[in-house]
Length: 78
Image (cartoon, rainbow, N blue to C red; front, side):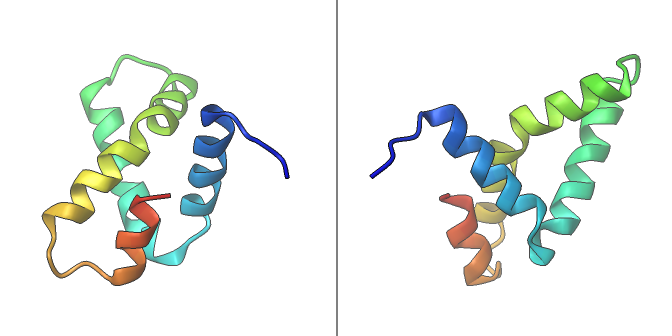
């Protein structure tokens, strides 16, 4: 049995989200929001901020939509 710290679990969760077709529209929307809210920041900063905040944002977006796919509901919970 291997124990992972919270950071490694979040990183794995983000990797799975980035490679799930149903999540792609959410990734694009969140990236746009991060860029629009921080236009003076660099692309590298945008990527870091996106990775740091996406999971929380994604969960809140999916929970807002009662018609979300069951898969998305499971993905929001890791």
